[in-house]
Length: 218
Length: 89
Image (cartoon, rainbow over all chains, first blue to last red; front, side, top):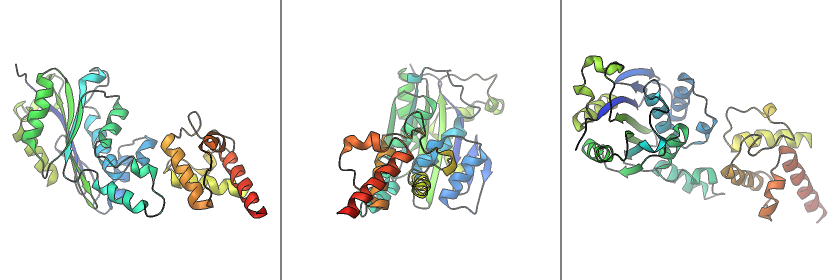
């Protein structure tokens, strides 16, 4: 039987802004991609040396997950196997694939090669947070909230997951858009900051996913 | 040898993207893997690439890797030995 599922947090990285729960929390209009990602890393006081070795897709997705989970996710609330990650995008890992291809003209870079799959960003998020639940990466031409709602609801309704990080992690060249959602079966309305404005906007359904996606996309 | 060790520290930081590490943070004899700098197997491959790109040295025997890449000093000694052998040929 389907259970109530909620979007308990959202986060995103647009061309020049970082969002948390539908509010802009950081802005830098002048930086190019590498500097913008590094500026986000420093702004949020992150300390994770592995970050500097990641490709841009993983950096962007990982940074968004840090913003998403900060103050919204209690480590230990779920078993590692109960939290999954389901991500989607349009360009797969093409940004890094092309850089790796260039490197093969001299000496192929092992460090680039290991990022020539889109689901590596999921691995980076899972390693950081000790998550071991179901994970999957899908390629779509455009953001597909209908698919995300159906796929993640199925995982939660069948008790495969209790919580899931899901969303859109698109990056190629100088174009990027990251939109992540933390989705949970249970909602402690008394404690949750978003509950004060009413839980209807937090229900995990395509209309709410779409609304947040378009807010972050501008 | 001292100049080579200093050069290697700068090159290792650049090659491995160790952006939060400074050359002076790396001891000459400090282990590079596991308990030292915490490098992993992909980093080991990048060190092999560094030797090829910067010093034109190909690690001929993979089993020598752990001994050669134990520390910056052992890498410098390997390069020095290799260059000495080449100059004699």
